[in-house]
Image (cartoon, rainbow, N blue to C red):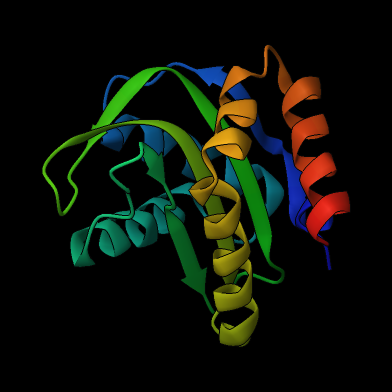
Length: 155
């Protein structure tokens, strides 16, 4: 399954404004609760925060990979979010301003699917040119087009 087949457009946001990591995670939880109404916004937010407490999902390049894996999530869903201004995340190299968020939600029943998708998102974000194309998108249509192009180039 391609990344775009896992994408829900309610989690595709260009130039989102968030003043803090907690505010960003809350917005991601709110949007995912619209995708999967059987899981409450509070439950998703708790899971996202718990994952961040285990270790930051941010990289020194300014990309964050927040994710929530729960038994009550029925299918894997990803989102791509660019931020209007960087949001500070802790990172092994010190605090980093995150500008690109690749978020993932999935089921504990399919851990390998989660790992494979996370690896694909990491490869996408690791390439400076591909990362910059996502960051330069002016709107959600351009963001989606950049993601679709990556899907055609890399499956």
